[in-house]
Image 1 (tube, rainbow, N blue to C red):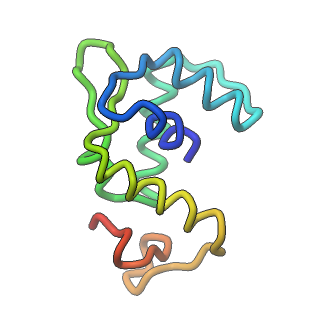
Image 2 (cartoon, one colour):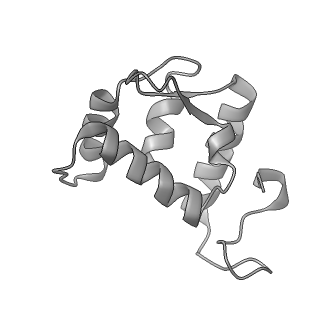
Length: 109
């Protein structure tokens, strides 16, 4: 979720993969040996599977190595709500049993 937090700080601006990787590792205290774009893509894929199935509508890339961009301020506010909700709730599964439980007002699927 640190990836979304980094992107939410620079709404509608491309953030280079290098900067995203550095910030995510600094916030999480982790280490990563993968190339920057691969690192960011794996994070985005993990978020898509575990938390936000519709993340492809929120985060876009130019396909030219510019990095990721979080679209539209309204959607960024929804991401902030999701981040706050995840910090205050325990993990549960939804009725489909395939995704973690997320309130309907924050769901993108």
